[in-house]
Image (cartoon, rainbow, N blue to C red; front, side):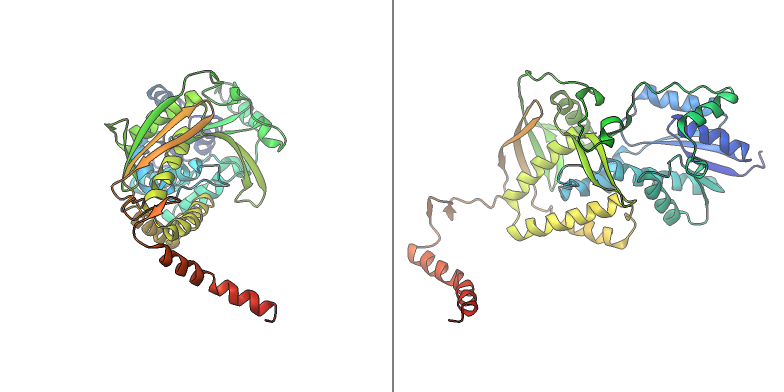
Length: 399
């Protein structure tokens, strides 16, 4: 049995984490790698990653399918809150990193590891999310970040590995791509210039057929959770993956988000998040039908606050649990169906229905007629409704 200390490494099989395996071994660690699948990895890719870990000399490798956990612990609250950062970006990477860090921390503690390592650079948001999560979940375990500590370029990493007989295939694209269940992020190239736009070929699903026929679908929700598509009952993960495949064909949910990073600078990232955009648009429409105006107002504010906590690496702040309780409570009556049509680059919501609908013709039909009050009732209501403004205006004018 080895007497070397054990370091658990969050491993993707790319250049940075491959460098980390050999670097940590040369520092005297046994390295156990772990890959947490939060979407975006097929069986062949997971097999390649495991083989790469073995070839680099890791003592063990573990693959964790965390898609169901990602949905239940993180994504469902983003959907409940209709969270789109900057009204555009669905926070796919933010949720993934917390879920991944939690799995890595649990594995490290179970293995009695002396250290945890990740391959983030010192220039992005992920380093903060990983560091904060690991320090919160396992404060007694050393945290090592070789890429950040050494500040090496990709060329230097490649040359260092080559000296040790390890060849990493050159990147076939100028873009850095992170594929996940709630969306795919695309960085590099045009994203570094606020005046430029990503070409369609930058996205993994490529250019779309602008002349394809539209597709109409019906989504079913049960207490805020998507549970059916076109009458077929589906678990949330399966439904999300099905919507991603369909939506990618139409190029819906694509865009470039420009916003504030955790580091205090502005940044841009391209994204393709078909399922997230389809579900949020459908869910928001259903909520308009079944929630009160005050619920909708405060949900928007508190949902955005929850999204900010997740984005900025504050998931473990107790406030996040309070906000989750509020968001979950708000979904009690969010049950029904939404009909929408997908066109090239567009989602159109066409109809919504629910047994909990606030639209009740037996009470009134907007702009047509009322059964629950008379014209005289309405006249009196309008008079009282304007009294406060009448008094305020008169006071300002000294009357």
